[in-house]
Length: 110
Length: 114
Image 1 (cartoon, rainbow over the protein chains, first blue to last red):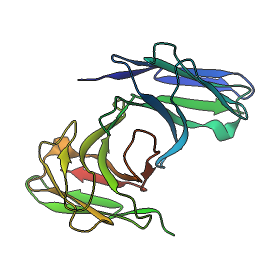
Image 2 (cartoon, rainbow over the protein chains, first blue to last red):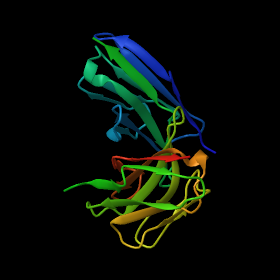
Image 3 (cartoon, one colour):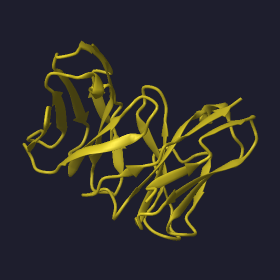
């Protein structure tokens, strides 16, 4: 079946450092979504990318969708302690189901 | 507007016991989903529904059954619980499916099977 892998599994940064998580799919995606889950919480939608090569920004967060629509990345500039949590990508192959990545857990030390 | 709610929040079962998890949404969404979340494995789809009266299997359906008798409710049943079903269960809903719609998640149910 379709697999969506994320790296790294875990990253610990100092506040102010940058952070990037990468998402790779074994198949071409129609679109990709990103979610954030705070410790003890539930996933919350961040953004959706649809077009090949698309780049979207939300304040300090930059999201990219690869040209082949099989990979994506989330980059956070100058992390803050409020960025702590697990970030998931979720790929859609067009069958009305999302396949979630394994997630990247981010820890930010003040 | 409560969004997506789940009942119960926590539950401990013994092997072989049965239980039903309830998910309710007040956003009039057509699609509803049940996921399980295990450490290091992300969210895996158990079953989903594309509308009232419909259900379909997801990635890991074995050992679970579902029903969607009313549009706003989606029930997940465990007929004979096993320790491998210890997990955090999340329900989610979306307006029309995932192609161009975000999913809204409930707060989760933490289930332990002894």
